[in-house]
Length: 174
Ligand code: GNR
Ligand code: NI
Image (cartoon, rainbow, N blue to C red; front, side, top):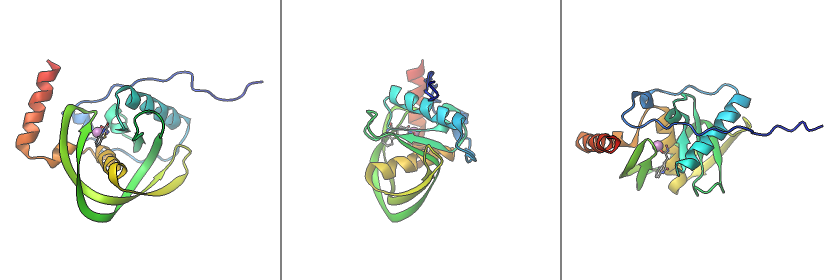
């Protein structure tokens, strides 16, 4: 008898776009990594890959739980899951990186963030792990944890730049 569980249905979820106020909600910790959470993680991967992203926070798909998926190669080769992620800065020297966001389509801006952090999180099986991060991983985890806090990379820019970006997105939607 076949008893294995297989994901039969996957779903591409809608990604909220700036300035949707739901992107400003603060996500709550996951208390148990159960099958519903695992299904959600799979849907988030599908959604992220479909949109050609390298990271996705649950906030972006209107689920206000502390869940992040990532695949820095963008090709399915290095899927990573971070549940209840927390970081501590190891090297506060700022490094700048040209950031994009699936919630702010067709906009990139150079953003400065601490260059080295250590990440503590639960994996897709609910097991805790710790990992030091530099370069794109450090950038991406900080970008995603910002989403879980209701923060977006445009918040680091001047209000003039932010206004210009809002106008551009509005124009693109019309
Ligand atoms: O796909 C994404 N690319 C990216 C590029 C530079 C810095 C951060 C990112 S994350 C982004 C996907 C996204 O919006 N995650 O929240
Ligand atoms: Ni983003």
